[in-house]
Image (cartoon, rainbow, N blue to C red; front, side, top):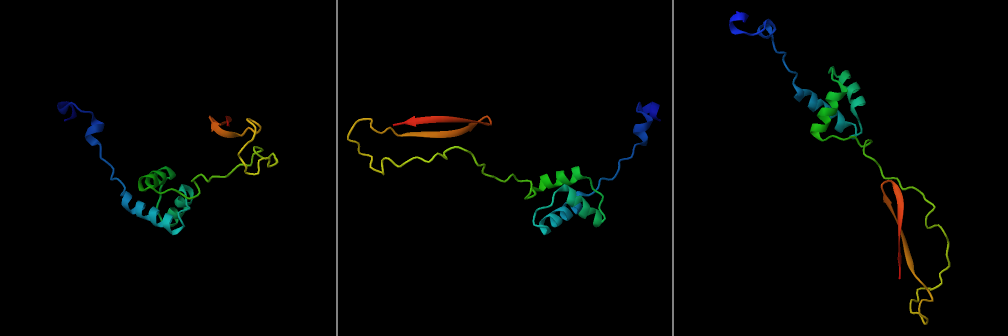
Length: 128
């Protein structure tokens, strides 16, 4: 029969496997994630799902989390200010907020601004 239809025997005898229903696993992942202050990642979710009797890979859990828009609070990068040695020089207050000058260019005011460009600190000066 395969010769008449011009198909291989493996194609003729092929049976598709029933796909697992992601709905049950998705709801379980969302429930566990929300019950644990949205702090669980794929590793902890996998352990909790195994306790409930589900066998799921971390990649599949990650894919479902991405589809549902679940992001662990620990994976979000936190801003941490870095201490630098910039602007720590103590200078005297010469003008005392009196900007009217009697002589031209007796006091020169400038601003030094540091900007991070391509992971390096660059600076610009503005003088008045």
